[in-house]
Image (cartoon, rainbow, N blue to C red; front, side, top):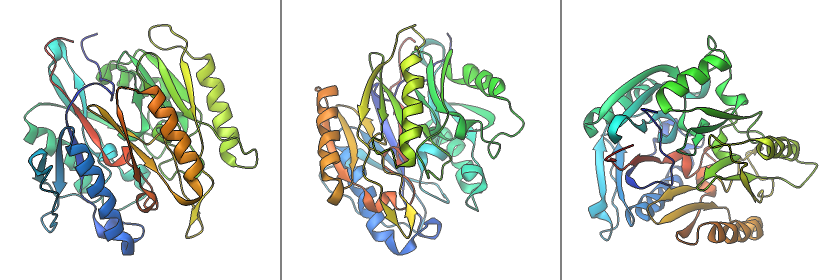
Length: 339
């Protein structure tokens, strides 16, 4: 295979984050609270690796002196602040040379306007980083896919096959595109993501790969909750699936936080919207009534990744805007000598 997307837990050169944009927020009055979460995430990452912080010209941000050396401001105009979805995806080409993929971005099926700056951001960032660029004529958000770095991709039909993304492409055609540009040979399709997820069921809230053939899934045990049937059906798919190496998946179940509402809307709470950094893992927690499941999630991840520091960050203010830690981050893998 001459091209491959590396797994997120592989060594990073840096992380990309976009600074929040008040006018794009669902709840603009929460802007300062959301910025505090972003700042906490950025400074936590900067302890372990470089962070490129993409800023609009009007942004004035002050970071801690202790980690300032690892924070690199980049002035690129943007409409919103979910870089996982509108930012570049990095792959390894022949001999380990990195390429940055510039997907088409349409704001989760045209849900938010304008999005022209966000659609242009990936290409501009790749250019400034100085790596080769690959422009792909297909709408795709980074939160809609997870890969194991060995040729297996995990996604949901609810999102990736949604006609508000690529109405002219069949499932097979989408698979062919992803095989060509990400080096995918084996696809595992869940039917749906978590209930109420406005991204149309991004995979990064319900399931994700980890190393050594492991896969995490957030399961709901409350039979009255819509996520019960969704997660049980997803669990059955994973139990019968095999990865690109032919291995049965080692499944690790994560608890589901209690159903929580804000402005009468169900919030999409997920412990799997975590983010790997070099030597650590940033975990969203929710506090209050969620203390028990917060602690269980921390225990499971400490056991799963004894070599990493698990860093819990309370993100309830962020999730009110529709996303979490994984949604606001995008990894840049280290340059490899050979694939």
